[in-house]
Length: 123
Image (cartoon, rainbow, N blue to C red; front, side, top):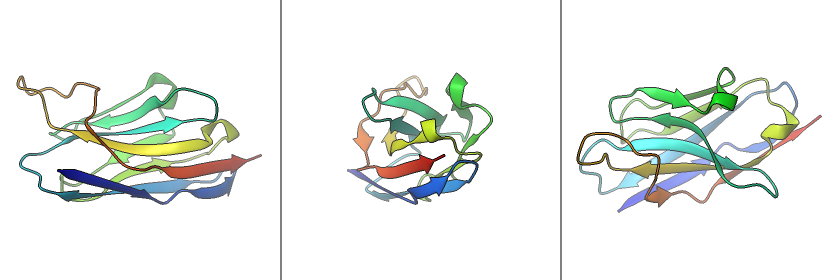
């Protein structure tokens, strides 16, 4: 079982930066596909950034440029650097993980989720 615990959220002013962390623990038998999602108040959860088992990263189109996902290896924390924060970045940020598919890809459906960390950006 994979456990994920997020931290690093908080209240910041627009233009500031935050670095979110996701601690990964539990029995892990191969490198995971991982991601950050967020859910703004009154909106559906949306994908922010993804990192596959080889370390390749992809971003939602609207997230390119200000968000950076990183992880050294699957047992090390997953990070999300957010720069030039905007009020519309306010929301709960979740870390997610799954094992690669049998074909070796990382489908964007995840089996393991953290409890989330709140980010609030004021103007």
